[in-house]
Image (cartoon, rainbow, N blue to C red; front, side, top):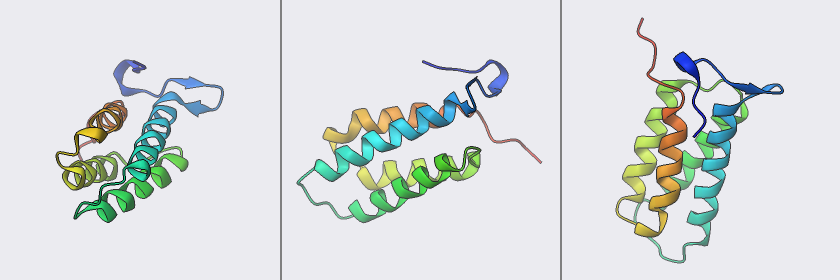
Length: 104
């Protein structure tokens, strides 16, 4: 697991490793969701929020509150679809790399 000391970015080249982890995790879960043949009520919510997470990670310095909000929406939308639990866990871990939102 790639973690930064004190929630500072750990960079390789010009990119923050946390952003790379997030981008990779979101892409994986998006692929898994797309490949899932089953329909469920909030699938479109999950797809929209994964697209939002992808856009946030593309910016390089995502807003932590927005990351956490999107994660909660994706988790709620996916619910108990066990086929997606591994990908969802990877996204959660990637979001947690950014630490807690700053107060004030």
